[in-house]
Structures are given as structure tokens and as C-alpha cells.
Image (cartoon, rainbow, N blue to C red; front, side, top):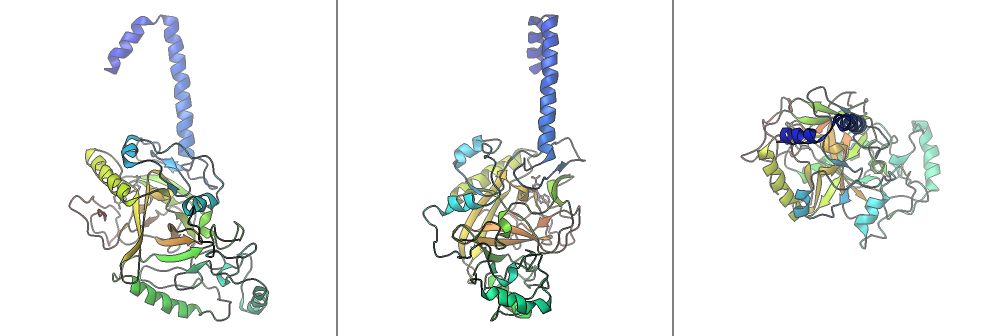
Length: 406
Ligand SMILES: C[S@@+](CC[C@H](N)C(=O)[O-])C[C@H]1O[C@@H](n2cnc3c(N)ncnc32)[C@H](O)[C@@H]1O
């Protein structure tokens, strides 16, 4: 069909016009090449402080089709409109990488005024000592004295009250079997449990939260948020500055795109949050159906629709948040599943004054430069009949990807 049109056009053009047309074609090809290079040079399109390159040594696919957003945004389109939008939402304006706008948007009319801290600049919890301050035992007394002058802050804590971050802003890691491993810092405030006490508390807490021994048990923590008085540089806002480590998006042979470390990453380091469109559960179900049918039709790499459920100790879900990063999302949308739980630890993060929790992804162990970043899409989820094959390649591989219709 196209060939016939081309012949028809050529019949109407004289040689000069043909030459002009060829020149225009070359110029347009150049523009397309530079746009492709720009897109492939940084998947974030300049919206993170760190450039994330795209590498493909496998096939001709230059870059993935989606629009980048550093933080979750509320979806303004219905599922019917959504199915007509092929290439994400209109690009969001360049943003300052502090999450005030996200917090502001979702807390409209529902800000919890008393939930935040009143710290003047940066918060004072024992885990939030500046990374430059070397906390040797001999300095503890000195720091204690310094702290007494500052207001005590309730932010930067795990569920249960333990300090969430160490002095270098690393999560005090909760492992897959549910133990906290201290990263070696000291708790400084009087009346606080020591590290071994934390281990016991967390082991108990995670036993309460799940019956599945090997499940990844997301920890839950609270950071300073829109209701707090402290500055955006506060040490209790670790997850609010976008991607924090060097990453790259790499094409893989069997799993489509994947996310890899582009530097060594220390255990407990915040890698990124899972950002995308926040959608209602009805909308999420409609999109799930749409993605399933797209999958049946062809060479589509799959959805990045994540359902975050927070459970009460009884096991009953208390909060459900649907984040769809398929058309609009951040680097987390490239993270593939691993049946052994992978090297990332999902952690529910609440910002003070913001009722919608988000999902942070932390290094569960030391990760080496070039290693693929993975986590489990759903431990204990029984795959349905048309579950897709899993290529995680681990000895724990169950053969199919976890998926459930919720
Ligand atoms: C959130 S996306 C991950 C990025 C995706 N690979 C891409 O190219 O955009 C989830 C999709 O990736 C693919 N995927 C993820 N983990 C996989 C695995 N272990 N084996 C096979 N495919 C996988 C599936 O198609 C899944 O629906």
C-alpha cells in the first residue's frame, strides 16, 4: 500500500522537487536520530539528578515506550481514555526533586496538622546524625549532650518506633526472613532499645505480619513530610529526592528491559521509589484486563501495575494503593521479578501528613556494579492458568511469574 502511494507521489514530482524531498527526508532522519540518542542517553529525560542511560546489545529496540515521572502522580484520566493514550500522559513540567508537590496534592483537604514534627531545620533522632559525623563510642556522650538541646522527633522511625536510618542514611536492613541487621551505628538516645533489642522486636513484628517464612516482609517506616516544619534537606527525608544511585536500563534476552546497578551499592541504601500513576481499584482492575489482553495479542513486554497492600497484624488489608507505572513511571518500572526475593527490599514509606503511603526500594545486601536489580513481585501468590514463564534464573525459580487478579 505504502509503495503505491510513493509511486503516485513520484509521478507528480519533477527532479528538482524530488531532490528537495530527499534533502528534507535526510534532515528529518537526522532529527529522529538525535531525538533517539537523547531518549536513549537518559531514560529519565533530565527529570532525576542522576542520568540513567539505556543500553541494548540484544536487538533493535532503542528505548522503552513510556513517560517519565520521578514521583507518583494522581491519574487524571479514566480507564476508557487511558486505553486510547498510547504513549503516556503529556510530559509533566520539569520539577524540583523534592516531594512537596506530591505530598501537597494528595493531602489536599486531609492534611494531618499534628502528625508532623516541629524541628527547626533538620530532625534529631538517633539515626539521623549527619554522615560526616563519625559516631565512635567516645563521641556518644558529646552527641547526647548536643541532642538534649534539640527537640525530639518522632519521624525517621520504623513501625514499632525503632530508628529507621543509620548515620549514613541507610535503612537498618530488614532481611527476607524478618531480622533487622544493625549496620553498626549506636542508638544514642536514652530510653531507646539497643540493637539486639531491635532485632527481637522486628522478628516478633514480622512474625505477626506474615505466616510465610520466606516471604519478603516489607518494613514500614515514617519520614518527615508535608506536615513537618523541617527543611527539605532533613535527614528524615531520605526517599524524597528521587533516584539516589547510578543505574542503567539494559535490554535482556528473555525479560525485555531490566534495571542494573551502574555503581556498587551499599546494603540499606535507598535506590528509588516505585513511582507511577495512582489509580483507584476499579481503574486498576480495568487496566489489568487491558494489559492482559494486550499481552495475548503480541510482543508486548507486560504491565508495571503494582498493588500495595498494608495489612493489620490480623492479616486484614487496611490500605490498598494502586500504582501503575506502565505508561507513566520511573526507573522502578524496569525492575524484573526474582523468585528468590532478589536484592532489593520493598519498604512502605509514610510521609508525616500524607495519607497515601508509597513504596521505597532499598538494597537488601551489597550490590555490585553491573548487577541486575530485582525483587519478588509477590511471594506466596499462586499463579493463574495463563501465568507467564519466569526467567529469573535462580535456583528458587518457580517457573512462572506471580500474578493475581485483585
Ligand atoms: C515491571 S515490568 C519489568 C520491566 C520489563 N521487563 C520491561 O521490559 O519493561 C514487568 C514485566 O517484565 C517481565 N518480567 C519481569 N520479570 C520477569 C522474569 N523473571 N521472567 C520473565 N519476564 C519477566 C514480564 O513481562 C512482566 O510483565
